[in-house]
Image (tube, rainbow, N blue to C red; front, side, top):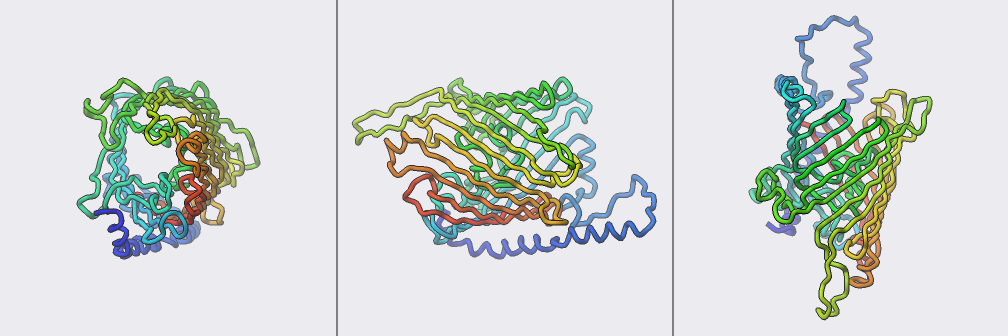
Length: 459
């Protein structure tokens, strides 16, 4: 089934989408009911409750949609086993501009199954864990309609819809063994890892596509080459406010191979993608409501892979040239500037972030990329877990690419506004709006206005 036929069939998704929306609307009064229940509790005498008594399941207040699985979930936790199934659903549409607005809507998403074994809790190996994630995705997004290779909403690019047989099956996305030493001052991971988002250029305020901003330009700096491969990661905290980390990952591992088998892990040339990052975690400011944490990072990367240098071939008269051993660097900051109370575990307040990255323009499409913005958690009274965010990002194409390949190449600018609504502890609904000027960085495309809704369900 091709992309166009799926989009033409998209109206058939509306019953499914309506059902999801109804499920989301059912718990809309959870916050108010919890407040009323708390008020009633204060009016009665508290009675002793034995440890063996389990709290009755309440779908409006439970952290998971299916509760504790009739006692199985806490039993697994006690045994050192964490199993966390979740789902993300996106409805996305290109309303105006870009390359195409006809049938330019998609229903996409993925199911994720996180498993972690705590060997310390099992009494086997202190401070050791093994983590594995399986994932199944569907839908290929509206990036082609908008005219940008970086989809405005995260999509794994899986062909087909999740109920069709041509959908990509469940696959192992990443896995690693983690060992900590010296009172958690040193952490070592071995396995298949993703260098950005999970390890490097993380940002406490900008977050990632699963919980905050959905455009990839806000999830990590796009000048950093993305690698999901087998290798090693080390992080060291000499003191609480300073860390250093680095990784060496195999950049040749095919995208959907697990890395368990020897023909994929470290196959081919003996080369590794290197990432290094220094971080300072001060609490620069203090207020009546406590210290305000910040994170200030500087990182650089090394890519050993061969890359074609941008040059006009003059109709084939000039041979293509290549370069190896490419390098680049980036900065990434986030800082809380206001907290509503002095509880260190309470995240209500205003945070800001900024990023900048550089890559050599002779063989990288993006030479500069930057983003900045902020989020406020709990802006509306009695909506303490809701998150409002706004950001601006710009991806600036290589001047050599413009001079040698495409004279219309320039820069792409993204404006994104979202509001994540926690309907229940297990269900979050996030409306999102984006304005993208010069999609894909070319002056030939019309400015696009896209919108979407993300639903996150914790099972």
